[in-house]
Image (tube, rainbow, N blue to C red; front, side):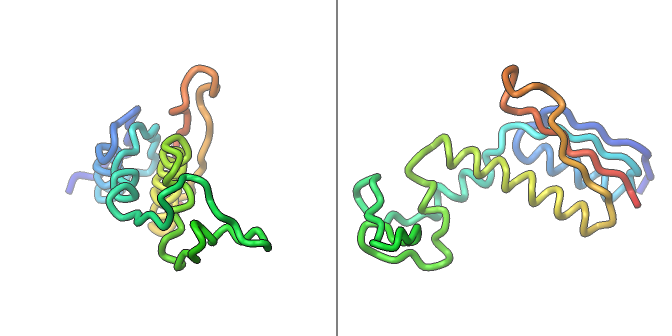
Length: 136
């Protein structure tokens, strides 16, 4: 494996970001600059695995306001995503954030110092996060 110093991935769609990160990690890159885009993989997994507990998009919350009460049934711990599955916008945003969090966490576990920064104003694009990782 040829070692490289810097990996830059700008708006690599979906798992292309993960492929760029894999190349950076396996080639021992000292600097990674990655602007992820199109986080479809986790969103697809949520779509495929969510089981709905209510036919109505309105939650039937208990008197204590228990957020795990949906449609009169209590959600088991492994159905947390049921709470965001009714709203596609929330589901996509949660998928985006979790995907990038997993990426940053993996890089940290592999010895990188990771910073997540907004490099473009939100008014211009919603895809404005940059994962900046430097080898410790």
